[in-house]
Image (cartoon, rainbow, N blue to C red):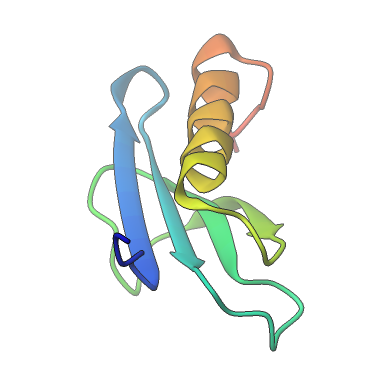
Length: 87
């Protein structure tokens, strides 16, 4: 049986909207209200000073496939303009 990772962090820069989308998720954990988040920051370089334009908490119990699908959905919605992250 393959060991599943416990934590994952993904990031994607969307040039057309000049935002960086980050996703963090803690697998196999259910002692909190949420186990991760997808956050959108203005610009390309994300650090402690970065301006957060959107954030979505993720419920516990997702597997890697579901987490990545949620992350991709947010990126797709930003690129298509369905999710407005301009400020």
